[in-house]
Image (cartoon, rainbow, N blue to C red):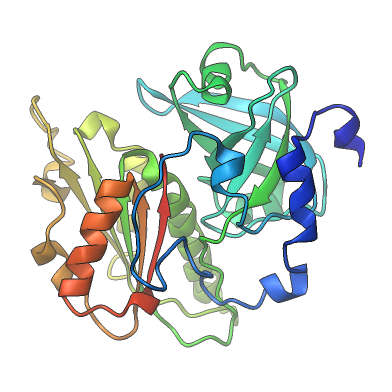
Length: 313
């Protein structure tokens, strides 16, 4: 493969292709395959710093594609948003998945959730990542060295996604995000809006039900994509709703956000209004939050088979 000559691929990643099921078997799940330990409710957090080790048993595509940075914006004081033009035409992903992020000259491989919709890749050959500033080498590179036309390589992976077939039974979605855990859920939300637009144009695609986003952060400045999220709720009234939860707000909340803001953590009372047999729950955030929300849902009688989660570390 062309990229292998330019980007050093760690042995752990090189060896995964032999244990991953073929693409045809991967395409069959309708929404998401098992996410970490949801099958038995055992969600003990094991903190391992290496992305490749944490995700060694997750699905990975075989394609590794070169990509060039074609856009950089500041999503917040701590988060940069990259737009990447992907070279390989067969490169695809499902809403909610992540990429292995290979940087020339840096041995550590990053793992970043995609925050754009599959539709953007299909239409323009581009995808987006929102990366929080940390000392981890790939994130540090994004914030200190990455520039327009910087070249990297990408490989899609992950068992956390929403990708229904057109003939699937309609479901409602509840997306629950904590901090930068919004990234894969924003990708799912954008995919949902693409499905709605197809329906509005008289398409025969999947008919999505209600989508409700509950997003928690320390303060309103850390609510990534907030303007875009509000625009989507206004564009699809009765189909998409959102509520923002802030836990450490010290400044005054701006007027346009006030109707959507709740102070304090997401509670069982916030969740119970969305419970139904046709609701699927997608959660992404720090492990303690996921464990807390999953426990709340369990106490409310939500079946484990309807709960999917992705932990960021």
